[in-house]
Length: 452
Ligand code: SF4
Image (cartoon, rainbow, N blue to C red; front, side, top):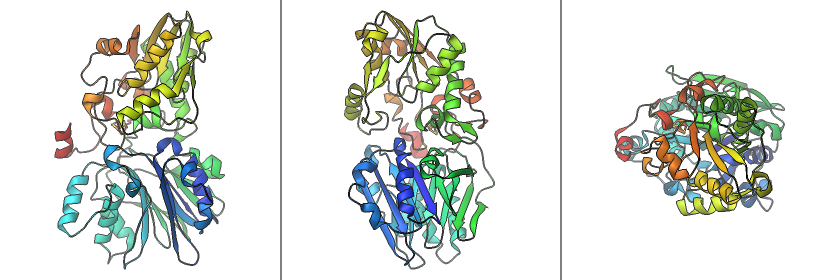
């Protein structure tokens, strides 16, 4: 999921729309924009699918105002449907507001039970609605106080943007698991899940929102509030490895630079003799470049990605994922035929994609296929909103390296170590690697452990 907010910029919805396009890789199943105009009216438009499918017929004209928030969403099987597409809008006698978020609360069940015991009734499965209800529990206090209190009742990896009639609040979890950054746009400000959105909007990067920070944007400018003095820098390693765009900088580290360094280290830890390095497009290309540079093995375009097909990893149903793999890639037969290939991929979740790609390359005539993965073996479930599914579905949760190699049908298989995954990260000293190591940065609540 990705969130975006604009404050103090005329025609804010147009900027949000273009900014969201640069966040489309974070979710392709829904999106929306809510604005608040100078006449004191709210405007909202949401839909399912890609942004280009949602905003087809001049809907942006129906979203006037110099302040707005937007979201793109992916959904797992239990959280799909238009109802769960954000931003959400809430009416309340103490002041209407809109909210969009990303990530996942690890104590969502406990918070839901608490709120339901106090009379709340929910319309969606979203954490944003939970936060909205928590905020409104303190409706007699100043808004920032109620937001601070609400954020201190939730645990997990998350970001939220909250818009009232006067201001926007941008919040990041105290563990720093999810990315959020601020930019300057004309006389106003932009907040985005990733800095790559700023380029298309013409905004200038200012800084990351700090873990445990609430950034307030209003006609006074930008203000910072710390909602928790317990804060850590445990940025999700999968943001660097897979999710984020290579032109984004997250917590002081460029994503492309990270992946290239991971590729270099991958070769040093897993050397192999081969004729060419082939990266799995698109998120693995930077790591493949690093691998090729370090090894001296030439980089070749042995696989071509079909455009306009969604990312398989974030499609919610297994049958759709498998169809996606077939539609997604083609081997370049004349390049790979008779060659020993190092296939560099960023990560393996279920193994469905990797298995098919190895098969595609062999069918195209490759004499050997050596698979190198620029991240550690994924063995554990993510509880922070990345749909890595259950441990049973993960290729490596119950398999040795050799067993995983056999499943993939590769000549050899090598992974990056957790140490190199950490050390490829220049700005973030100790990223979350819980899906590789099982060491979760937050508390885990009973129901999560039971579900494992
Ligand atoms: S468990 Fe994995 S996917 Fe989830 S936040 Fe941590 S590193 Fe990212």
